[in-house]
Length: 340
Image 1 (spheres, rainbow, N blue to C red):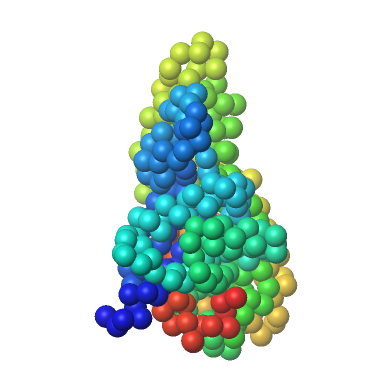
Image 2 (image 1 turned 90 degrees about the horizontal axis):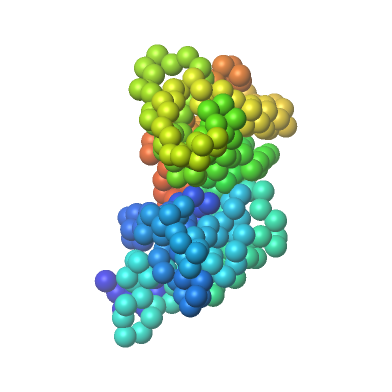
């Protein structure tokens, strides 16, 4: 290890609405929920990540759990600073007699505004980063999947995260056309909560909705290997008493239908905006899915049926964006024009 490496450290961060992933030395060192627990009486941070998530929905009046990011962008500037600072602390790279100069590459949604981008940059600076660069999520996902984004060849990426679905056509190291919509994992959870309330008269929390989505979530109403029904616990709207019901995947497919239809529409709109030569490339290569939302059962089948194109799910889609951000950081000179 050279002397300079003691005083210069580099981190790649996927600062996500649902989860934040940090890569250091080509390894995922942090993978934590993007949530902060605050003691309202002292205004001090009690926990960040998994520990804070365990408190979510079970906290008392003195504890508040906050998700600093909504829809892929910072909603609470101060809490975002705390989140980033604590994630950096978890890496242990700052534990030395002289804190290192920290360079970070953070991925951001392709549809982010200048104000929202500045909020991310300033939060990282306040958390201790000396140099901050940004890379768009679809580009990072493409690199993480293993696509050569510098080639004169069109590739379509659909990255469905917690807050946004990013749809982009990439060629020659740039985004040719794209759409960013706030329809993703969080909205799927809200769909499940609303369905349970209307159809079963039961109130459930976000964490329970997430478990339902993972256990029996589906984009189609007919699966070859359907999951077992899932026992869902909540509060009966009529009696106010705890209640349990069994939920099957067909019900959740119905609950998620409208949200998935919006993602399909965004994909079709992006394809309609794609130049003819790149459209021909996409016809050959198909569509690549990344992000946690791509793990929804039958989603690839549904998109393939709608677009009449091949659909591929990335290997380890949850970490595709973070992996690509890390590769861009490691090969900074090669990808420097993609990082701003």
